[in-house]
Amino acid sequence: MHNPDDLRDKTILLGVTGGIAAYKAVEVVSGLRKRGAEVIVLMTQAATELVAPLTFQTIADNPVYTDMFAEPKRWNVEHIALAERADLFAVVPATANIIAKAACGIADDYLSTTWLAFSGPRVVAPAMNAEMWSNPVTQRNVRELARLGCEIVEPDEGRLASGAVGRGRLPEPAIITEEISSVLHADSSLCGHTVLVTAGPTREYFDPVRYLSNPSSGKMGYALARAVRERGAEVHLVSGPTHLIPPRGVNLHSITSAEEMLDRCAQLWPRVDALLMSAAVSDYRPARRSEQKLKKDAGDPGELVPTPDILSNLQSNGGGRFVLGFAAETDEDSALQQAKDKMLRKGMDMIVLNRVGECRGFGVDYNEVVLIDEEREESLPAMHKLPLARSIVDRVVQVISD
Ligand code: PMT
Image (cartoon, rainbow, N blue to C red; front, side):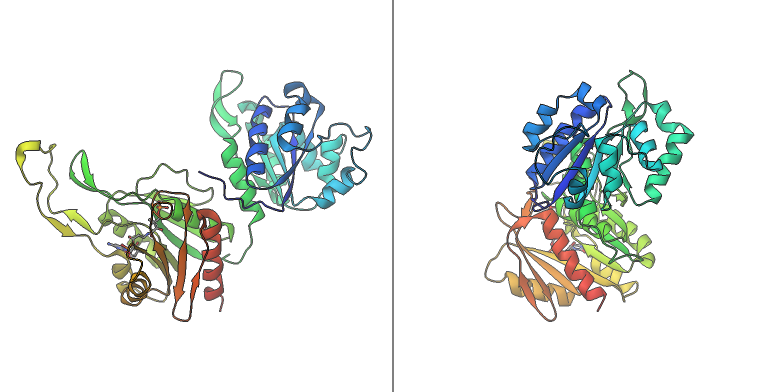
């Protein structure tokens, strides 16, 4: 995915401690920089044994801080000034040692002293041997950091540096970068709400290996799920087949066909108070699905019949929820009117008109939309789907809280 440039004007302190995964922090710095952030790296002495500070200095394009008593590199960047100026402090990877020190308030080097002086949002990405991770003392310390408001990026399970398999691996750098971005965009405006988001295509099979579908990648829907989650809502993401990793903290319900999407959404419907319907549901399905692969010379694969309209079905099972739908249109001249008609016909509170084209809409990272409700139409500039999702959710929050 291209970078959404959503960390412009943000300053991030990145603490690197002495775990073998320290090399992955280089990629985290690079990812944050590509998204527009200024990154200042602080390393423990042990971390400098694993990766040279010069590597971080070059990627971050900033001095690296390791030694409490070295000459200040700039007049205003001693540890207190650093702590005051940053928007977020992340420790990647975080060893059991720094987690223990942070949980107890021990400040005995540059990194831990700056951590103690910092009062903004924090992200901790632990990585260590599986036994150290599951040790009750480490678990207690991690819970304490979470209680103090740190976002913990839980380690993955897999092959560890020792060769053993277990929990303790640092998650992929892209996941850590996403979490940092989410923390910086978090607020509690949808706390207490349960939101259903649909995403991706549906597949309607003719036979075991062939289906009718569309090029939806799920990117728009997954970005919406992330943006809603950032606002503190409970999120259920009903998704057709995609290659995407679901955002953390979101309940994923994987389905294949339009019928399955309807069934799962209908089960969730009594619990939700808002629906964001971004899935590209196939409008037709083959009337019959062959048990065996159809032979090329068997002739016509059969007639097509309409799939159920999910939005209309859900609405008829109880209204009173906020409903946002999408309209993917290709005819420039009639797109606006078609979207408005669709909004009224399907009982939506708001519709996102998606003028699909070569570089926007299906499959790509960017989109250019018009947000329409009963009172106004707002054209948004072409932008990456993540900031776009955040803008759409801003509007949803305004309407829900009116
Ligand atoms: O997934 P991406 O690659 O990121 O691409 C994003 C997208 C282009 C798929 C998405 O932004 C989008 O436009 N989704 C809706 C596409 C679509 O099916 O539009 P529509 O005009 O056919 O349907 C209108 C609305 O009715 C949609 O909210 C749709 O989810 C819903 N619908 C459609 C058919 C159906 N049987 N039941 C429905 O509820």
